[in-house]
Length: 487
Ligand code: NDP
Image 1: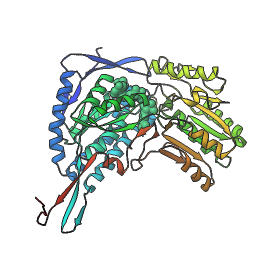
Image 2: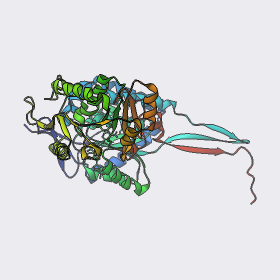
Image 3: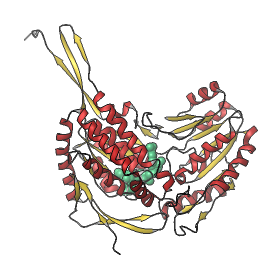
Image 4: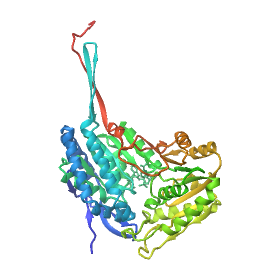
């Protein structure tokens, strides 16, 4: 049976490229190629820009409330098509359907809904200056680019398109080469909802296509989600015409569990923050600092629940709650980190091997893994692994643990578990991270701005401030009196 070949999505429809070049996409749970995708060659790139210029002219001229109605219609379509879209995400990413069914599409739709609601509420100001006055307008930037990672492909496309489009911009989106289909489905939904052609185009390919977007002089902003190293290359490209950038990058986030914490709740958080989406989440709390007096109790429960409650297998099985890693290469990188942990003296509490579950024997699975007896200088404690590998570290002193938690170039997330509200807030206020949780971990509602401190990012996604970051202020001074000129 021949596999489907999908095309780039430009000006409201699929568009064939000129070169005929394609790449193949593999289902991580089976190791089999499931479809091919055409690359955005020179022809597609040119068409995408021309189309976005036209799309921007129409879309930005619409009243915000009209844009809002179209976006809300897309939200309804996303929710109506939840199951089919979730299945696409599972086949592309290897994550369990029980997650994709209730998180990926819905949290994407929530963000578009949130920004659709805000679009008509964006107002300028007016201020008198003597007898004259000035007013300000919030205007869209123009054509923006979005570049996404592979862990939440459709959700990332929604999180970037929601604010960009609500503010009246056109967006050209490039998903990861590993997971390119969800963004095409989103483009179809936008068109079905009545969005003008060219307001949202999808281009496909790897780093070269990303670099083309970063360097293109007609693109005003790049919103990027991916690794720190790639983010630096994106910024260098964006510097070519001083594009605005938003950077959502990697993390190595700490979770601090104090001796007065509800231990079961803290174990739930540590497991969610390391094993949800088989560990492929940027905010994961991969450094879990546990107070010495509850260290053993914490480890006992963590080991029992990890070994008894995690169901690994075919991600399309609704009972499976732990899926396959994105690729064979990534699986190997995660296994290499596990070897380095062992070599550097960390002890395995559980896991540490690759897996071949009966229902998906050829998938890229690594067991949920917990290292204990870790110290802060180990590679597994310092570097982002982006897989299901948790490091647990004991601590005794509050001041010392804050210092250890902050001793990293990254600063995406952080969590504190304590029933002492003063301590919880005192500690969280000292942690250098952009997304923090107290007695919780991982929730990210549309209303809450998210983004990193230090090298974990620049700018924010979600929340009101993100809409502003897709607009520019125009000040208009109006003379009501005769000009007082010495000439
Ligand atoms: P990458 O940095 O490898 O890739 C991200 C995107 O950039 C992909 O679309 C990729 O294309 C593209 N790309 C690669 N090279 C370049 C380049 N030189 N110029 C422009 N674009 C380029 O990240 P991953 O996809 O591997 O995602 C994992 C990383 O993303 C982790 O570090 C994770 O922490 C981070 N992340 C951060 C989030 C946040 O909100 N802070 C959320 C999710 C993930 P292609 O894949 O086709 O090569």
